[in-house]
Length: 513
Image: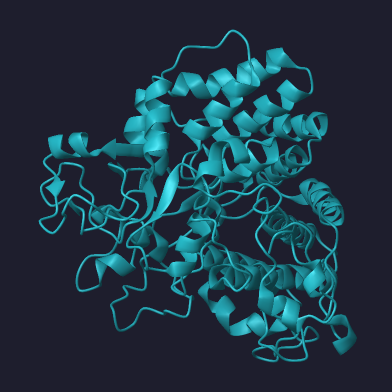
């Protein structure tokens, strides 16, 4: 990993949360590994940092796992800008999410639920066991609070109210927790972010090796997002304005450059999930248990070789396994908006692909599952971003997921200003994003313009579905795909958690499941 690898060996100082099998204990009751005691560990700032880095390890696994449970994929699949892709039966639980045939036993949802709580558990260890006796310790505690808030923000977005664990259990009676209300979870998120922001360093104060870590600006951006999702627009605007006025961030001049290796942790980046090819995996050494340090999900979504022959194309990309395929709807949205620059950096039509020297694969017969005539270019699989032989290229992608970009901050700020009756400020931020895309400035902001800009700017980045849900537009845009109002606003609480956790009953399940 691009984090501290030796974290794996001290994982036992935190109680690792994972969804248990059907026994008397809940997902909170897991045998710790290593048996290291907080009495003999966490004595130095270096040791505390190791545990904080472990939170990122759990999160990294949650976004690209050889066990095929990726938050990145799961947040994208229900939207209308992408389709599950591959073949109809491949990774069925991903296909079910894409098709709104989601079951409470979906293994992908179980997997990410587990990893969210692993990360939260490690954060709790630092927050509750480390004394804020030095500025360095205060900053590490702040980082742990921000990371805990981040993971709870993901959970409450995906599942609604969830068990709220801010102290790791030490007694069996504490293993079983009921679902907290979504408002309670958000209150904890706000508390953690507001406290963390005080002591977190700026991005510019981190060394180059530590740029992956939460900074003050990262926490302010996600705090603003949490407020925006609750429709606390004026408060959200304050947090997002602080990011903008910090002068710590800016847009990359060229939209297409955002996805290149050269701009990782660059001026537009507030938070990335980081991967490396340092392990040089082959088919015999790749850890399919989910502890991979490369981004295997990148390979999963490269252009499928059953459809595309990329060998002669000047695009310099290589084949993958065809998941997360672009929809014709998002391609048409770019065309309708006259948005050539972002379109050309996000996807490519079959005809344009042929013009680069590519062609259809010999085995392609004119019909393929979830193929609507387009290939993804955003997060493209490039030979330059993986390891060469004797390593296996498919298993060693270094592509970082950009989880919070400055462009997203500007668009969230525009929305917050718009809904808090500050149209002039909304216009300024919206036009910054449009200008980079080569589009003319708007002279007034209407809500539909914000919707369109977020659709085009953030395509395939996991925002579209959750934007439509919170705006009340999901039924209108996704009804024909299977979306049901009153059900699909949230994913189901994993069934094995309901079985294992005595404090959650079947009647506590989200509506419709």
